[in-house]
Amino acid sequence: MGNSASADCATDHIGITCPKGETRAMPDTKLSFKEMCAKFDVTPRTLRYYEYIELLSPEKDGRARWYGSREVARMTLILRGRRFGFSLEEIRQWLLIYRKDGTRAQLEAWIALADRQLAELDRQRTELTQSIEDLRALRETAQNSL
Image (cartoon, rainbow, N blue to C red; front, side):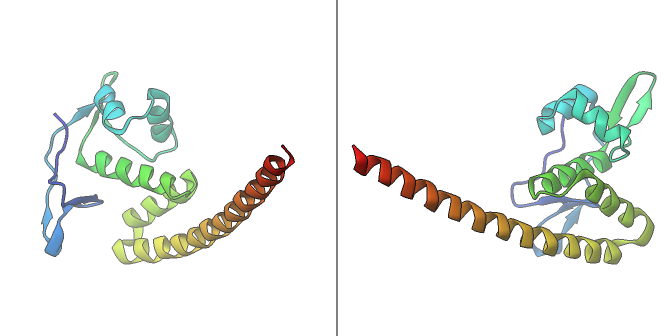
């Protein structure tokens, strides 16, 4: 049913990239709306929203939606971007760059976004470390009061 690649390959915007630079075309398997939700563990509302804001463009046959390898790869990138803390608008702009300006511009834009996000995550980690230290100190003070 779904697209499967060996564990040592990663999905990207052109297919499956494996070690040593080998690229394999993704199969032309089409996923239904329900299969796409299950594959990525997202709600139907989320999938519809990603379509609404034009992150995904499935083929439509009447009321049915079909998701090919391009949409599966895009969804992988969307979810990866969300996990890294990028906004949906940043992800949408990044995906648009690929369609308009090609891979080099896409990678340059992504590097700039990644640098900014890494700085933000480092800042958050510093704050979190300080919060943990403060909470431990308060807990120890309370424990010593018993």
